[in-house]
Length: 70
Image (cartoon, rainbow, N blue to C red; front, top):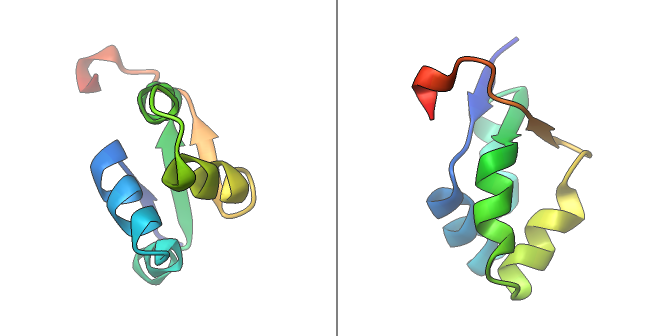
């Protein structure tokens, strides 16, 4: 089982292209850190809505435990 953790830029880029499903090719489980989701939510637009629409289906929100990765 493979996992991926995504950042705001690739998520927004793929959402604007209506191609978020391409992320599922890369990994079985795809996680978005809560801090990244907060960054995305700062600008409400169609891309943000697309990301929110798939959240907790195959894009799973997570919390960063090791603060060195922030």
